[in-house]
Length: 334
Image 1: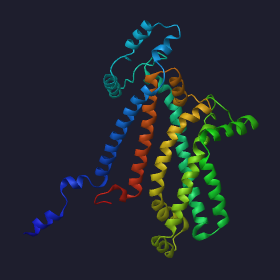
Image 2: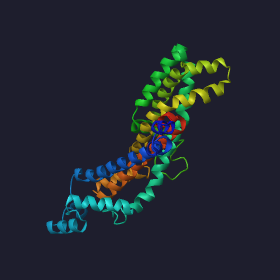
Image 3: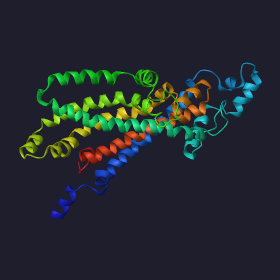
Image 4: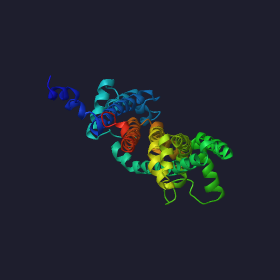
């Protein structure tokens, strides 16, 4: 067998090379994205039959006759078979038509477009706050308490962080309203009419996840600082900033961002509850009203949008992980 033949057998095929590194990584993430969205669409459609009551009867009121209810159900296509309704629903997703709101009589996308900026503002701002605060704070506590140093600080931080991470957002939101809006009269308690209206909702969303991520960063920092490569870096007497930012930070961010991705995606869903606490005019307030009025297309549309935001956040986290740690890409470039 010739040297060329041996080398050809040892080298991976062109298809395998294509599936390694960034191309393969993005293809896998894209496949996961498509599957996640398909499951999301199915869940959004199937949740409607679980809602109690008949939207046609609710829209017509208590004096409605059976004939009028049946006529309205036919006009709203509620009498069609489930498979046909699902086909129309999926077709509407691909054409950007999520149906007409039973309550408003206007396209669902128009209502969502008016509310989405408020929800996106809360969720994305809270995510930025979590990352900006949790990573440096966790590293600082991890450095200060490394190797069993300052046990008092470690215990105090662990207890405080554990408590704050476990407080539900709606409970914290209520406390924030009482303290900052009622007692101190420093911030608005509800609405979105002032520039500072989003401060308390963002805090209610961000405090718990911040301390949950901080605990993970602190633990990962302590682990990384005990590794041989960190001892070697210290032996070269590198500057403190370079030691921690260049050598420690990238190595602790892999597992941190993996967990943070789940937590940050959860923030998008939590925004629905927080908006109702603060009467914030986003998708959270809208979906509650849609459920009350049995506005099925609106409920389905909002679930789709909120779920898509969570999926996109996870995708962004995956891409950041690939940039920070090439080992997560898989294939030959790992």
